[in-house]
Length: 315
Ligand code: NAP
Image (cartoon, rainbow, N blue to C red; front, side, top):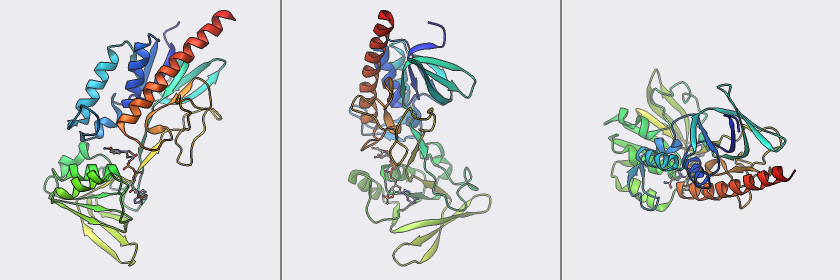
């Protein structure tokens, strides 16, 4: 097998990718993990992990490092690479990167996750990095004793909003409804900080500022009233766009949100091509189910590799 030929290629090194690497390594299958950033993925942007058994209140970066060390123990190789295209040639997958590398593998597990959805309002792009941020862990400390707004009503908004109360003197939560997708425990935790105020049934119309954020223009959905609140920072947490645009036409099917459809083995419509983690179409996006699904994907991929090798040997 030449240098860039593998039995399993794992694209993405977040919790799902790391777990797939651990199980592929334990299956004694020649495995590479391609990751374009830090191994650990979104764990690096997560304050505290409190919903993974046995890891109560450890920081995301701590958990990322432990996961990586553990996976490497079983022999998977980790390489830097931004995968731009996955295609199929005969019984092999071809994985191309922006850096000009080409890898070949009998099976591919895609765990590329996605990125923060944008609000798409005036001021958001212009003030990105000048008060607009999508990462509380990365940027929260810049707003010590300042007024912060988070936008959204899901787990991310409530969890990261509570985290931001460590820095901000006040944290507003702007949400377009008066009910939350977030789990009740996260809403309670957010309220219990005593530094928060919820602005409900309200949408952000504009992020205001000249060189740096100074306010938010917010419209109440029920009354139509528009008001401006003075804030120094805005953290939109309004969902997630999966990175599912790297496939040759016809290799995968997606749901209406762009998440990849798989069967119970995490296999896409193309045999040997698997998906796990946030890029996959599923009911919840937790670390626990990402690592569970990645376990299934890795063991199914290893079985696919064994069957492909047997077929080759008898051909
Ligand atoms: P999410 O669950 O999809 O929630 C997105 C929130 O943003 C919703 O409240 C939505 O409002 C709102 N929203 C969407 N577009 C908007 C817009 N244009 N303007 C204003 N508000 C908008 O996304 P998430 O919170 O990022 O979570 C993603 C997944 O990761 C979820 O499955 C979540 O459970 C998981 N997660 C888990 C944890 C944890 O367990 N600790 C932490 C973070 C994330 P509506 O409700 O009105 O649609």
